Length: 286
Image (cartoon, rainbow, N blue to C red; front, top):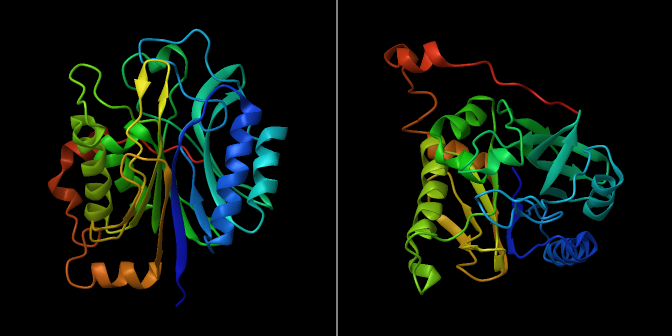
């Protein structure tokens, strides 16, 4: 078995797409120099997130998954596996999406399913969760609020995901903000969800997030890598940076699941309400 060096970024991004690509290129170059094979960049890092959560008439630039911008991202990725958030335009609709690429092209694409507050005035919701194979292992992707729903990450784990990548533009609390962002209650929730999703599914978890401010939102950063036991291996705190950790993913999963296997020991017959309301996940393959 071999180890994988993984990174999750906390960085600011805005509407200037060229400036965003400059930052992406710099983050990828630094990660490559550090031996990183898998790099998670934040939600909406290509064109920025919404300026507020009450609706944003001047939203991010719409990009197509097979368009020149994603091809440019793939060229920057080269021999690395890179995930990055963007505003996807498809069939006249906009989606809050995350794409996974290497220099060979697109490996997977996920559209955000769960939409907080008024995000649905800008984006249409995605319809499901699916894992996909990459050169560094089988991945599953989520976006921000998706991770607040245990069924989302569980769907990916049941589809064989060894690594969960959640990209976010997660802000601090709007109604009761803390002067010290490190003490913000929404920051605590962000961290709790990351650790819980890794532990309950016994998978490796990468969490990337925007940092700084955009519009009336102040992002909590807090990028991290979490092991299958829910332990944080590396984190940026509330500052810019890249959380980097090295792990033998297969061995870590085997070790975590050896005695108490949370996926193996499930009792679906005891959860009839979940089974009766379940919808078959939509799958996007490339």
